[in-house]
Length: 143
Image (cartoon, rainbow, N blue to C red; front, side, top):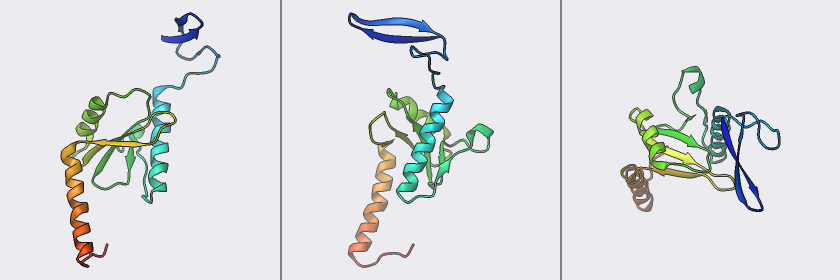
């Protein structure tokens, strides 16, 4: 059962409709399909940034990650309007298996954000800072 809020002149009325029917008679997108869409969208965003990533195949039990291809990083993707970030981080931590857990999240008409634990951010920052120090000294390492 779905409760749909319909705005009228007097405020918001609640109307009970089936899970598949909205006020306009369109089909409501189910959460699995919406999750898949968010994962594909974030994977495309990562590729635009120069990283060879793809959506994980968690539906077949092969992988438990939303997006794969960022070594050492476990990505949990959330494409929702309201997000409990602590629950999302807990899920990412639980599934990380030794990788750094992050949550990539976005609302409609907003940019992608990454949320991670502060201790993990400092690990990454220290690595960046070390690389900058080597670069300034002319001691860059070849990739």
